[in-house]
Image 1 (tube, rainbow, N blue to C red):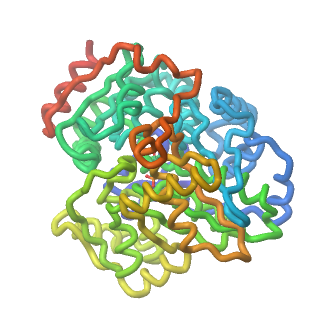
Image 2 (cartoon, rainbow, N blue to C red; image 1 turned 180 degrees about the vertical axis):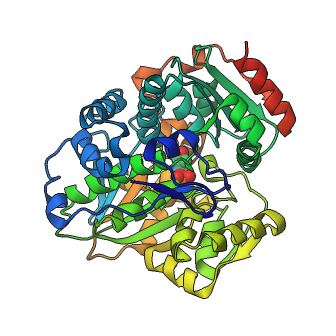
Length: 463
Ligand SMILES: *Cc1c(COP(=O)(O)O)cnc(C)c1O
């Protein structure tokens, strides 16, 4: 299995190489050259398997020979052992035909743990085998950073630097990043928005001298291995609702388009997914683009669902690549227009292609709060604000003939202020992290400046 860049100008890589490098050297994102498929019988055979066994069968064809079957299976087991629920991704019913897939039972209470815990294991195994060391730099709107730090802290072969927007993450998110004591963990509070963090990260990757000097590796959702790990729960959820003999739809609270793109891959692999619904908050560039064809960035408006406060949705490039018939130069041109002019127009044919797979909707701040309140009053379910956006949009797109699964992307206790504002209830942290607010914090404030950041990273790793 080879991986190619969405911009068509970087060498094809193996799974392991694509995972360790993150972003392609032409600025593009790696995607599999071909998508392996599972037959209805293969999918039927997943009934009754554990999450880990399902994960092995779904991901194995993408991973190639770098890892043996036995090693890969062991790494999967280790990755999910620290989850607070045996099913890993359990489902609850909200209403007839509407289900909530709880993806928040990992160590940092958001779905990011599904991918990050696994790639922590994969990185350690691959780097130890190769005798190499890397510097991981990640940008986060809150949840990726805490999940990455949790997954990579204390590992010998990596330093991990996380850039988060100063003052724009929730207190639980910040503390999950600033309280680990391991020396290889570096939490950096940047003066700016998430998009500034992501832009600085991309600039570092495009500074090849720096990239090679520090052996930069990326674990943002642009990393293919993360998308792959997220494909698994689409299978486990759909199978438990009767796939392949029954179609299932999914609604996904979306920011960087990573999680929903994993659903698209599941569909391309043969999982009978009827609709994939993109749910955005008031930062609704994806909803506007799927509605009008105009992908136009604007200011970021901070919301009560901060993990979706995004205007440049990195993984959308992967969907565009397919919508443009895998024409890397067409994608490169769109991305140039985005960089120079703040937007682009999707061609009629490509837009049609996108709409074949994706629908979309948005929720305002008031609608989000009202949904949290309603879900609590009528179903006894406390939703985090991101999940509430999903539930609201799912309700608008639901068709009674097909079960709808809404992805619950974070635990309500990760966003207690919004949940309390809506429901009057302050959700407590699970027992295993109840002392989070007593632990001392360690964080470095940094300016939104590339060379200052690069200097800081050099100094820290050469200590
Ligand atoms: C990251 C995140 C999202 C958005 O996921 P994408 O893969 O970036 O679309 C939604 N909700 C929560 C809680 C998140 O942490």
